[in-house]
Image (cartoon, rainbow, N blue to C red):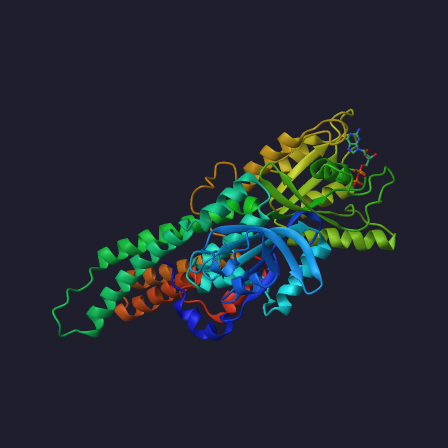
Length: 468
Ligand code: GDP
């Protein structure tokens, strides 16, 4: 059972309210769900729902649904179903009532306002999941993966998020943490009670355990980094001189006309942000103005933005027009792309080739020849991206950290473990080694939330939507 004790002590007074929110999207749909959680959830539901069988919701056990109608003092509002969950067997660990009505914007808001008037308070973003964490239904790493499930854009991202939600990452992190705790306890006992007959911790054994922990943490980080293109998306910039075919390529990837495509050089003036999925890889794309020197002010601003974007992106897709000789701008782009993770796209393969393709191929580790306009080369692009970003062979049913916060904790823990190993190798005192081990333990406890500060918990739930 996850242990949210440290944090619970700080916030124990804040969770005795009954909260409510619309849990379905803020749009018209077949069904709308108003979720209520807390001590008075079922009582509140009872005061606005007439069960067709005449039985009150309060008299019902958990995991039961009732058909009836929602009403206020002026009469019936809508027909629907009320689903009851009883603490602790609910998502939040509290009593929960889910009122399912027709999914109109007005009707859901009307029932929500009614629920507020009967004593519920508006739920904050992620508050249902936060309560699940505080009530020990899941740890922090699982809570984070809830949002990953919701925002997953592909099969592998969903698989990774569901795995974390099921507790795989927590299990792995807890196991690593236990190894460190055993080391720390043995070192502390030996150092603190020199007169007792406690056997000295063998440096060799300690070194082996720390090495084992180091490898586990490294693997967690490596797999997360390799899978990041799938689970988080890659900050990508498409660049190339005007008319190279950037917008056409982007439209091919997005599947619809997002950028303005024209054969007048310099038409793509603003950066247009777009998220696209190529296979399982998610690219956060921006289509930029062509790289060229221009006396046109607006275009120049675009070019500066492009140069900046190259510097700040994780991946550059450099587009070249193979039907024209390489220009000064093309050469400049090749220079700018040095030391960046890049895919060179040699475009317009349907036209006679006039460019020095060999020069492009020699300048980029990864390059493909395509016709963005006439062929559907998305498979070619996908496999090139998979091999660049290393997401190809990754097993998403393994332990994949759910987000940057978890990676940061793992990275910090790894640094401390490496420091401990160095201290051990340098023959420093047991105390010095143990300080680093304890810091590594703290980082892992922060990751799972067993020892998370209010600030960390807020960071996690800040990104949630209301109603989850
Ligand atoms: P951008 O300025 O780099 O965004 O270039 P665009 O995508 O606007 O394309 C410029 C022109 O080249 C348009 O007329 C496109 O239809 C054309 N174009 C783009 N890709 C190809 C291609 O693969 N083959 C041919 N023949 N024309 C292309």
